[in-house]
Length: 294
Image (cartoon, rainbow, N blue to C red; front, side, top):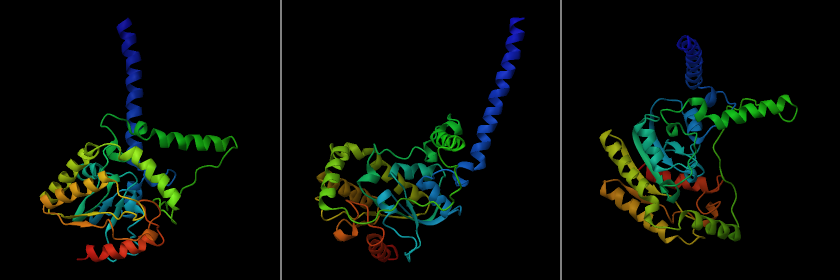
């Protein structure tokens, strides 16, 4: 009798689990979160929205410094700007090997310390961070919770209902920090990211070699560059050592390395590394185009 009751109750539990699983799979397959415009998209999703084609022929990858540097609307070279907030070279490996992107003929890596820092707090909603055992709704829990709460608050009269925004863009930087603001930022960055040795970048240096190997195996031309740095700010010794390690890794793999450290003057920069989108990005794109098209 007890066993029979257990089977009955177990059947209901199994049915609920199956329905939940199917609903979760349906939510994932529907594309509702990245395509509805009701949720804030991450930089990968924005790039995918702006470039829906299956294969991107030419791609330039980097962190947020690239986002506000390479202007797709002005370039003559026609590369997809896969600049991503907190994007690292390890993220690029995950995208390539996981099939999240397909590169046709050329890949350029826009490197700096941010793209190489192993403990960078990368965006948790990037799809390659989802573990195989995680339900999709759980993986997207922060965005779903915010969506539900915003609309509940609207029902209660303390806010507005979410409306679709299908023209989202990445974050750009404007204007120039004062010297005092720059110094404050440098002090904060030093304490967070440069208070150690090359072990802080070991995994992304390994990932750099993996990208070079992937491109060689798949017939993709790959080049690397080191992004410009604000001349008003003294270079961190660890930053210089990292740049030279990236140069050495590139040359060992037969990959062209373009050092743009001193390529731009101070008025191009918003802060230590992000460019002013209205002026610095225009100059950067003009300079970079000459190299990309060479």
